[in-house]
Length: 249
Image (cartoon, rainbow, N blue to C red; front, top):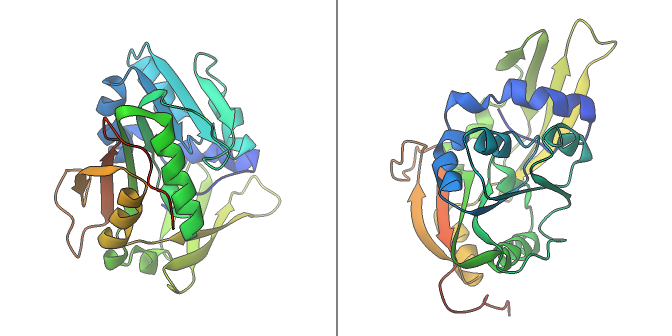
C-alpha cells in the first residue's frame, strides 16, 4: 500500500501491521547491505522496524534513524540502542559518517520539487563516507500504479480496514486520501498524501548532478531489470572515493 509520514501516533501504531517486514520486498532486499555496513543511516525510518530488525539480526555498529514524524519516532524509540533523530535531509548535517544510507517505503517520493530532490541528494552525498552507498526506490510511473489506488482495493490488519482514493496524475504528481476505519473507533481516520513519480532518465540526472554514481538499478525486488511494466525503480548509488558534490547552476 502507499506509505505516508503518519504524524498521528495512532496511525503510526498501525504502520507495521499494514507493512510487515517479513513479507519480503524492500526490507529483505536492503537488510544484507545494512548488515555489511559498519554505520547506517535510515532516512525516513518511520517506526524504525528495519533498524530494529538489523539489531535483532546481530548488527553491532552504528545505526541512525531520521524521520520528520514524531508519531513514527515514538514507535521507533522502543529500542534505545539506536540513534533516533527528528528531522529530514534538509536539516541533516552529517559529514562523511556512514557506509550505507537507505530510504525505504517509497519515502523518496515525498520529495516533490526539484529543489527538495537536490537538497536531499546533496545531504546524502555529504553524510556518506567516500565509497559509501545509498539505496532507495521509487515507483515506476510507466506502471501507473496509482490507477489501482481505489476504494475497491482494501487492506486489512486485525479489525482495521484501509483503502485509498487517488486523484489524477498531473505534472508527475499524484495526490490521494487514505481512509482507516475500525468498529472500535468513533469515526474513521484519514491521511492525505502527495507523491512524485520520476522516470529513469530524470531520476538518474538528479543522482549524477549530486556527484553520486548509479551502481545498480532494478525494476523489482528480485533484481530484474527496469522495463515498461516494472513496478519499481530501485537504485543503489555510490559516493565516489574522490570528488565533491556538484553545485547546481
